[in-house]
Amino acid sequence: MPNILPTQAVPDFSVPLIGGGTFELSEQLGDNFTLLVFYRGVHCPICKMQLRELQRKLGDFEKRGINVVAISMDSQERARKSSDEWDIKDVTLGYGLSEEQARAFDLYISSGRPDSEEPEVFSEPALLLVKPDQSLYFASIQSMPFTRPPLDELLKGIDYALENDYPARGELAQSR
Image (cartoon, rainbow, N blue to C red; front, side, top):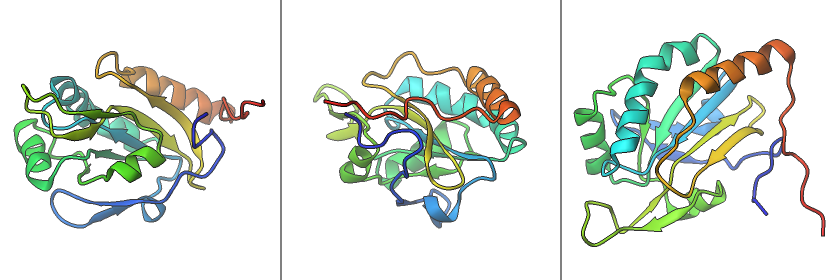
């Protein structure tokens, strides 16, 4: 069973940011939601495409009152390389997420392949929408790098949820 169900509080956490400062969830919640984009790291070409798309759509999220941050377990050096080489200068980019922090969000953890540029340990991708009360509203947590949720579809869903006061779904714990 997942550690966090929709409507339950998500753990507070902080990570350093490229460009300086720190992202601390409880201090930077959006007016309507906070979108946490957990990405695999600089080694992942699919993450590169996803974060470039996110760069193009940042204004769409911001006008909906959504604070956006992309986070990885990458080191500062690797995260800076993502920022510099991926043309995502406006995306708030956090790095240094610990394995413990990643597991607290139910992220899948992988070991790097020795024949690749993957780090020794990294988290797989996820998108989480967190409400201003720091409760989980939506989660898409993946065990593989491919088939990411399209951001346009996410934005449409957010519009529907906001217009219709749509409740979080999947909130019932499994009974035994």
